Length: 244
Image (cartoon, rainbow, N blue to C red; front, side, top):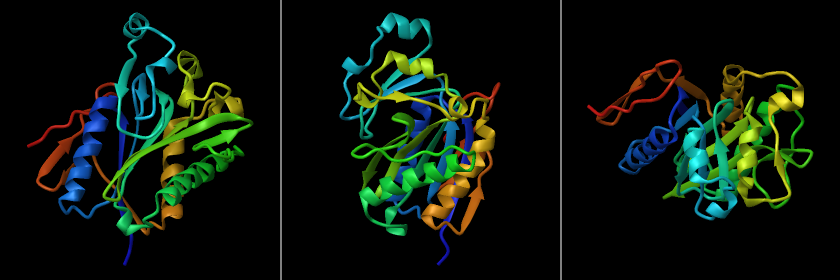
């Protein structure tokens, strides 16, 4: 039986909207929807704090956040605090691992492999760091991973720094690890990489690692169960999820 995934390339989406959509897709899948999804997108400036995180690792106050238009979201994924923003390729696989391999640690390692294969295509040699998730270059974190799983259905995913403004990480202790810094593909290579060039490589790498036979790219409007979601783009901006 062929494995298929629906890929939705969403552009720039506010974190809260993408979070709601992930949970809605998870609910649909728990109610019998057999489709597996891969959402790729960027977020406006956002700090997210996972279930093992603490605001002690957020080094700026609310006045600074408000003045700079940075949102803070407490969410249900694993891990501590991280930054999402322009220039970062975020991917949210909403999968039923019944269709793949029902092994949480294998799933995490597979996501790392997707990232490693992706950056390798651009001449970046990255690796794993013992005892830590994500991918690394010379002790600097290039991509992070945080997931949540319920009844073997996954949400959240990976965040790859393509051309991210790394100064935004100076306001936090990324992932709660004090002695590690972050990097980006553009910093490593010495020139700017566009997310639009990285996304198809990521999707292809994802297909290879997870044994996907067919990727069906969805338009800005598609049907999930009995609901229709429409993406409206204004200046490459945000998703509006409209339920008919």
